Every structure is written in structure tokens, then in C-alpha cells.
Figure (cartoon, rainbow, N blue to C red):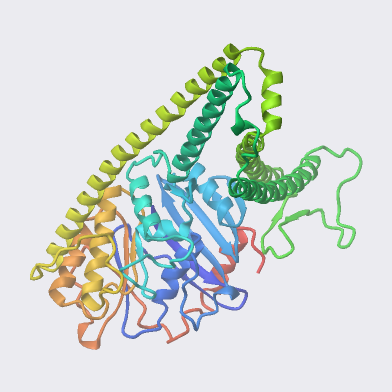
Amino acid sequence: MIIRKVAIGNSEEAFIEDTFSDGLNIILSDDNNKGKTIVIQSMLYALGNKPIFPDSFNYRDFIYYLEFEHDNKNYIVVRTGDEYVLKYSDKIGIFEGMSELKRFWNKNIFQLPMIQFKGEKRIVDMELFVQLFFVGQDGKDTSTIFNSGFYHKDDFRNMLLSYSGDSTSEITPVEIKKIKDKIRELKIRRKEQMNLSDFYKTVAVAPEYLSKIKDRDAFNKRIAEMDSITNNMSEIKKKRNQLAVKKSLWNGTLKELNSLNRNIKVGELRCMDCDSTHIAYKGTSKSKYSFDISTPLMRKQIIESINEKISAYVEEIKVLDYEIQKLQDELNSLMDNEDITIENIVAYKTGFKTVKDIEQVIDDIDKELEQYEGTLKEGINFSNEAKKEREKFYNSFMVLMNEKKKQIDIESEKEYDDIFTKRGTVVSGSEETVFYVSKLLASVEMTGHDCPVIMDSFRAEDLSTEKEKRVLNLFAELDNQCILTTTLKTEEFGKYDNLDEIHIIDYSSHKTNKVLNQDDLLEFKHLIQDMYIEL
């Protein structure tokens, strides 16, 4: 993946950066606040990252444009608020939110890591994915990830494993608990049947069956479990209904667009206000994009994009249907599994003619028990095997990370023992820079990702000249595109001029706190118009 162009602007001002090389790039300036961080954050924000712009920059006022190349194909993505328009080849994708974008990205551009998240498999959001190859200037904390909140450092670890080929398909703690609960339930049922069998064999009525044996605490717990399942089912049904409504609305839009493909032999379609033959398709009321669908080619592109969107909705509805079905099965299981009462005994007597019938039920339970216990055993064995593989991966990662550290900081004998430092031992200055550089380099080698390596303020103002040379040499050796930024002191200017492997992008001439300008506005408008965005 190679970044080709980054643009940011609105109807009044804009800025475009399109001078990146395929190799090692350094964006530099003679002072702070020249626009380096704005450019870096703009490219990541366009990809779907959480906004981490400087506080003085009102990012909501602008439109973000990113052009990149992957596998010899060119892609353009434009972000306005939480909406995205993506263009590649002769196709256009329209996405309302990160969920739609990442599903499309995973299917059509390249696969994103998939991790176990809260007991379910989930394609990671861009805010976690970009941390594989990006280190920002602000919000650094070596003891955890950036924007810690929805995701945590264990999710980052799982992402590394997933991207390196780990399938994360081992049995999860949630699944283990469900299987153990099922085994416990089957054993209780088996005991009930054994007691019932003994009851049939006795002449006298067993006293224990004539007393109330329903345990109030167990009963209340079961009711709470049923309420929890019902609530979960209700939430999932809401999501399914929302998707169904969206699917229905898009189907309506699709019918209208398809109707425009019919030849009108008497007269033609015209706007009643301006008498124009141009017909436009516009997104939601807040959307900035608008498409002229008067031409068959544009209609075809929009129809293909909507079909893709509808297919995604159908796929997600199927997943939710499956989740609802599982919850319904759990609920039915809880409702069917009642405690033994005198009424149960009567029901059993009515249902079974002989002790042999009861023993047949016990035999069926034994077979089911054997199946669940086998699944649990295999799952735990697989998890233990997966755990060993993970430990092997982490050990290899740390060995490599320490090798990179040693190449940069030759004098230091200290070694890293984890991908994150212990809480309360956050490092800073040049040590922090060496830590992040070592992790970025190890991530590239261990996962084999081909995303650009991006580091804002890579010298952290305290990196010595010798360490900086070693860092640049390591970055230059990568096959990945690298984009770094730094602020130089007056006496440092020209220090990279004789290094052929470095492409310099100098922002010193920019006005302080004013990277956007009028000179780039016309070109920016053309770029945005080509993406059917209204300014």
C-alpha cells in the first residue's frame, strides 16, 4: 500500500500533498505548527481512524481526500464526517460509517485482521488496525494502545497474531462456559432420570419425591438468565430491524434508479424547476456527495454500489438471525429444564411405560454428554496448543524487537520483556522513540504487512544524531513506504541532503498555524468534484 496523495479542505481553503516517494519520506520544517501533523492525521482520518488532530484544529469543518495504491490498483477515499465515498477502477462505493467501510475493505481491497472480541469474531476497526503501522505525536503511552477505550492492548496482541496467520478459531472462554453449563445440565438430567428409574423400581413412594425440591435461589438464577437472554435477543432484533429498514430503503432507491434505465419513447425526463435533463442521486440529508445519474455509466456504477450495500445488509441480517436462533435455543433450554416436583413425577409416569424407556433416555443423555465432553476436551487441547503457538509468536516478536532496539541503542543493555511496558513505567524522550521504532519494525517483519510505516515526530526531539542515523537506515531497508516527520533546528538544516535514500518534503515555507491556502483550492475542488462531493 503506497500513499500517493493527501488533500484536505472546504469551499474556502485547501491543502494538497502529492510528492510522496515509494520509499523513505521525511516531512520537515524549521518550526512547529507548519502542518506536518495535520497532513499525517488527515491521511489516517480518511482511512477511518479516530480524530486525534491538534486541539486548535477544527477538523469537522473539512473534507478529507486520500489516494493510495495497492496491488497496482489505485483507490481514492473521501471522508466527510462519518460518511465515506470510495472510488476504484470504474466502481464507486458509498459507506455510512466504519462498519460498512471495513466490511467492503475486507472483501474488496485486502483482508483486515479478525480477532475474538467479547466472545465473538470481529473484523478490527481502523482505529486499532492503523496502530500496526502508525505512531502519532500526541497521546503516547507505552503501557497501552492509542485511544484505549473500546479496544485494549490484548486486542492489539490478538490483531498481531491474526495478521500473522493465526486464525483465532480456538474455543473461547464464553464458549467453554456454555459447554460446561450444558454438561452440568445434562448431568442433572441424568441424575433425575436415574432417580426416576429407582422410583419406578420401588414399591413405596420415596419421601424425597413427595416434598417440594425446587430451590428458590436456583429458580431465581434461572429467571435472571432468561431475562438476560431475552434482553440480548431484543437488542439484536432491534439491530436486525434497523438493517431491514435500511435494506428496504435502498431497495426502493434501487428500483427508482433501475426505472431510469427504461427507454422513454415519448418525451424525456426534465426538471420541472429548471427544465434540465440532468437527474441527480443524493445521499442522506446531511450528505455532501451527489451523483449525476443522467448517464447510463454513472447509473450503473451507483446501482452496483447499492447492490453491494444491500448484499452486506443481507449478510449481516443472516448473522443476526443466527444469533437470535442461538439465543432462542438457550431460552427454550432454560424453559424446558424445570426442577423436579410432584407434577414432574406424574408427568414422568404418564410419559414412560417402563423402566426400559427411562434407561433409553439415560443412554441418549450419556451419548450427548460424551459429545459435549469430547468437544470441551478437544477445544481446551486446541486452546492449549494455540496458547503455545501464541507464546512462541510473542517470544519471537520480543527477540526481534530487542534486536532492533540493540541496533539503534547500542550502548543500552536493557531488554524489553513485553510489547507494552508495565503500567506506571511509561518511558519518554529518546527511549520512547526507540521503543516505538523497534515495535514498528518488528511488526512489519513478524506480520509481513505492506502498509506504509508512519511516525509523526520520529526523533522525539531527544534522539541523538548517531541513533537517528541508525533509525533511518533501518527504515530505509524496509520494502514498505515510510513517512516520517520532524522539526529541525536552524543548525540542522541540510543534514539529509546527501542521503539518496531519503526523500525530503520541506514545509518550512508554510505559514505558522495556516497550512491551508487559496493556491490549492481550485485543484482540491476538482478532486472533490471527481468524487461527486458538493462543497
